[in-house]
Amino acid sequence: MVFSCRQCGTCCMFLGDYIAIEEQTGPFSFACESVSTGTPFIAEVDDDKREIFRDHAFPDAHPHACRFLRPDGDLLRCTIHRDSPPQCKFYRCVALRVSDKQGRSLGYVTGALALHSEDPELRSAWNEAERGRPRSDEDAEPWIAAFLRQKGFRVE
Ligand code: SF4
Ligand code: SF4
Image 1 (tube, rainbow, N blue to C red):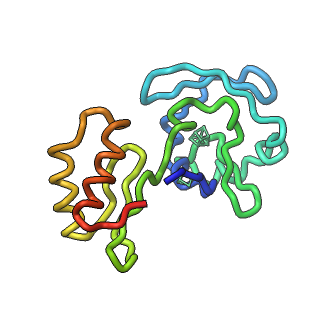
Image 2: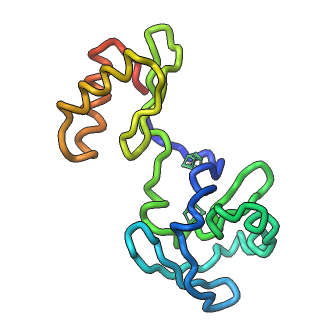
């Protein structure tokens, strides 16, 4: 499945403590740190998002959200899309969607290869897959998809 971000902003709503602004260095420039990896980065607000960035009502109302997240119509958008750290750029909330043979959704697997499902059969197959999967996530993703298909699940 080719992941397409819907820009719902859900994944950024609680990242305020992880994308830290150390210093404002210009009207739209910031020295930041990606706290989970301890990586510093410089971010400048994207040219086309400066207008929405100026409005601080959203971050004031959502203190746990990333400071760079802003509403834009129906979307919640990252205003430093160009300069956001790699873990933001490569984040995929859904890597695999799993359903039964009738197409009934049973759960999904995140880009970090965590299963979100309450279905006992899928959970049991997942546990088996976890024990046999290749070590690297890159190799594991197609391997797990094939394993679950072999067990009779639909995987997209
Ligand atoms: S990665 Fe997923 S949760 Fe995050 S904004 Fe995109 S669709 Fe929403
Ligand atoms: S930098 Fe952008 S993508 Fe990363 S958490 Fe903040 S708003 Fe989300």
